[in-house]
Amino acid sequence: MNQNSIFLKAQVSLAIWYAGVMGVILSLSGFGAYQVMAHAHWQGVDQKLLAVSGNLHDALEANLQQSGQIDANVRKILPNLCITGIKCELESNRHVLGITQQEGYYIRLLDPSGQVIATVGRQLEGIPFSPKETAWQTLEDGKGNRYHQVSLLLKNNLGQSWGYMQVGRSLQDYDKHLDESKLALLTGLPIAFLLVSIASWYLSGRAMRPVYASYQQIQQFTANAAHEIRTPLASIRATVESVLMSDVVSELESRETLQTIDRQTIRLSQLVQDLLMLSRMEVQVPNQQQQSCCLNDILSDLVEEVAAIAMQSKIDLHLQVLSDSPIYITGNEEQIYRLIFNVLINAINYTLEGGKVQIFLEQSDRIAVIRIEDNGIGIAEADLPHIFDRFYRAHSDRSRKTGGTGLGLAIAMAIAKSHQGNIQVKSELDKGSIFIIRLGL
Ligand code: ADP
Image (cartoon, rainbow, N blue to C red):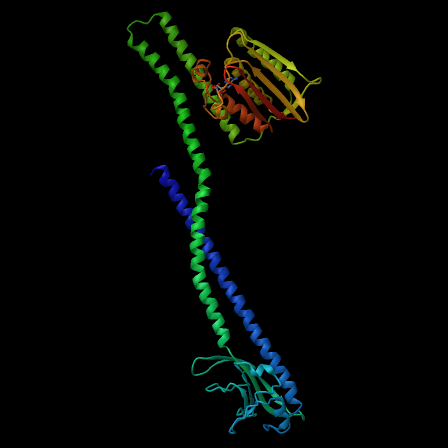
């Protein structure tokens, strides 16, 4: 399986998971919203019915006399009343309670045995009467229309049972509203899911990008490291093979062979050390050897160490401290030494005979600044953004000649960063370079 198909598979599975989880959340939210809306609507229906029936109940009870008898006072309250068995005269201009006029509402007055005496509004057929069972009922007529009603016991002005009153309404508009909401949900959810799927694909692609980039970086790094290791190994092998092929080996030849092997082994172990150091810096092992380090001392030691190399190349090496008191920083002394060494040795290695390398140390605010200037071969503008990359060499020939592994500046930058610092570079080809190392105090 090649890397592209691995990443494609990962992206597909990420998108599916994301869309799936979002789909479930969306469906649950939609279902929840529907339930809340239906409940609120139902509450509204109940409250309206309760208000109407309560008002009517109070108004009627004060005027009721003989059980099951409807007199003029009741007619005044309910002018649209239709008495069972008598032709109904509708006085549509007079309404005591406007709600009874609204389409879908009805009132029924029943005697104590449950016989309908009179009605207002919609005439219902096939609706059973069972007031003693429950005050609230949701009923369905023969045509499948649903009704919601409340039944209340009525007493006359002497406190005796008069009969029952039922106030109800058709649930047609309620059901229609719910059906519309269901339809909106059923069409909206697939559309939302489609959009979520597209977004999931796009987002998972974005999420995979840095993973892919770091995978490529690791691949590049492995290829570079293998290449760097292969070169000294090939050299050792070629040297040993040439000696093994000759019948007689002189002492001089043996010595030269061993020297080559020694040189290449040193190169290999330097490379391994650098790689180990970089990987340790990368996993950011907490610095256990934090101590107060005097930069003045570190720089003096460094100058002493590289003085011989500088002298060999006839390079003028100078250290200038621009601060009255010694500058101390907290960190790992060995690492800080290594950081400055890597930059300083480059300045010497990439400066031609007779050149000049200057080191300046100063303090600005809470930052120690080490400036290493050379008038060497400089770095081309195109190479500048890459010189801190691992194994990057702007001048490969010179780098290999001086034993450089191409990891020096990568290590220096990693150390600087782990000490709340950074390295800045200014350079001009054939004119020289300035490396500015800043470290937090
Ligand atoms: P190397 O081991 O090759 O020196 P580094 O990581 O230390 O690797 O440096 C990366 C590259 O940056 C070098 O190969 C060199 O081309 C360039 N470089 C670094 N320092 C200087 C300098 N002072 N002058 C010119 N080029 C430099």
